[in-house]
Image (tube, rainbow, N blue to C red):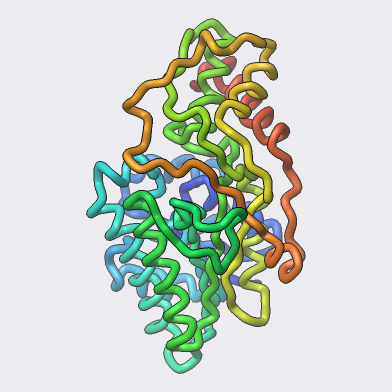
Length: 327
């Protein structure tokens, strides 16, 4: 039985990755920061087979203790402060957790592994936000990184540190440059879930409008459940490497709105949406679209859920939540 340790286990990706690994017969350990984490109860209820350990990406000693307790074959570093808008308000904390936290995780794995550098296979959750002011369309593994947010800058640090540990110590350390991936498990602060929840409430007569920022921003949106499969495949490969994970399609926020509202029978949705300058980024990323050829050919991976299906999945989940009084 393989063993895996996941940081950020209470997040969207941690949830889907845990389900995937459990289905493959893994013994799964999840690292949770603090005893009073409000998401622990959800984790215990939804994924009772995940063994919970406490630790902090800012504390190497706690990471070493977690490694000793779990003795993992694979370490998935998903932990981060991942809401881009928040990173401008808290650039220092974002840099510490999302950037330096990767270094701490790599160093802990290196120290734990001793002379066997590849004892624990390491996955780093890199991000398409690293491309920022895009220098190539579509974006590939070798595209110049030009981040446009403190979050993106921190992710670049973690990405290159992962490469450095791989090249310096011979670690089996891979980075997945994941483009936007969504699901019904997404937090309501993210625009896709913000929209799906608002659409469900508007359809139920419990809300009238939603405030958004740039409706013309374009993203390469996929399903988180598909993307965690790519993470797993990276750590099964003989050689560690970096891979773009994307659908290779781009869609605007307007397109998302159109599909979401039409799904609940609202054709003229413009009256329900207004743009608020407060939701515009200080430095906007206008167009992100990936080229995941390397992952498709090298890992045998491909996305299964298309964009319209993803939008409808998220709206249906929030319609059910609103009907049940859970949202």
